[in-house]
Image (cartoon, rainbow, N blue to C red):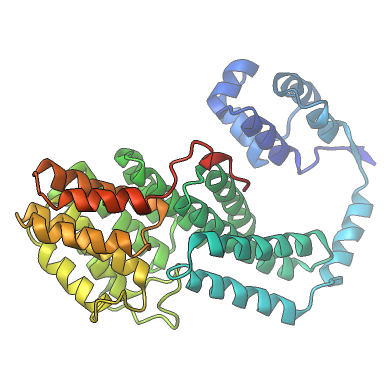
Length: 398
């Protein structure tokens, strides 16, 4: 047996660094190492010396873990034998894997209609099951399928946490989804992680970061994928919030080209499969935010399609958002009274999720600034239906 570097060294280094809240640059300054050198260590592109591992142990207070991963003698014959055995050994049947993958699609399809608080425990339970299976005996092919399923579940779980304004939990599960996607070499999940972060920071008012994350997602996403389309639509939203109408229009035109020949997905309600019908709803939202005169016509058409009978339709959450979009467009068009009525319908439906509540608040602020008498009624409804603004939201267990 010869001394060698355990392949887990890079992962362990990154975990200890992130646990301390350090960037690669910050750790480099503390450890007197270059950022590029530390990156190569974490990525497994370069093997650390024993002295470097011990030095990083001290800097990160890792308790000798990093040094042991370098010092430890490795029995290569035994490892190779274990790998050969794992290729064939498995406690997971093909039927179980198929059920898991079906459950992932079912949960992603439930997202548009199920309340976030009801969906979260279901996603959590399925994700825990996948983790348990990964701890057991699986073949390499089965491991990748489990990693992919776990990646989808983790990014969906992060999205639900964002909807519930539990941002610390969301960030943790987005990191987990990213790691699973990297191990599985699944570019689309990686792109959805970036797009989801873009949406989260957009709702917090950090439009430049949202724009940057949207661009990153487009670069990572496979050509023709739903993630690339959604990231482009998210770019348009960021431009709209920045007030650049021309850039907004250009991004929307790219979305239109990307969806021009897109077939209707088998499950149009699936959150991670882009439904061409969504394009009109995103256009309405984006144009309303940009203050574009064309927003009213598009927003009316979207609401009519979603809710032809005025009862919320098959997708009540999306219908509520469409009412807010049309309300904002009507304010810009000088029709604030109808805007108040639409805002009241959206809020009273109880379908405005916490992460989307700022849109209702924005509409309220605009009609109050205009001195619309009925704005008082909308304010009362907002007070009644607003999600609890608890400072403990981020401390909710992940």
